Image (cartoon, rainbow, N blue to C red; front, side):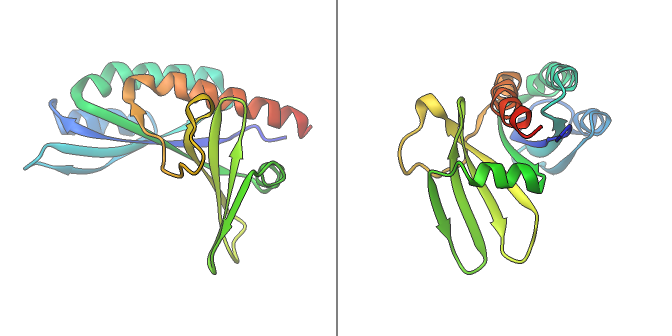
Length: 172
């Protein structure tokens, strides 16, 4: 059974606080600020969160919202997830659309709450999952990555958790 499903929550926005303080705080939460451009005050970074652990989701989302999102104007966040091989195969069986090229296979999977793109490069076993849209708002053919306000991080991770708890339980 999969006990860990690490989501990488990437964020960006215009920093109106102290970028060094934000960087230090993100580092303490298990993430990193990847860039800060002083001329525009744009800050970018990421935070790793185990989606299947409700306490970790609650804690990291609360601390992120209180200490980072409040210091970044127009803070936007998007999610990428690394999957183990068994979960990737289970999702591939549920695909609704399949796209492929010489180097990459992409499957579109619609679960109860969200629509995901399942990415796998040929000659590798690593599978990545990208959140495309919320199921109730999805439009056929919309293959752009979903980004939401940083304040909605907890809600978004909770909906992803609900989608995958059912799938992980069926893998037992």
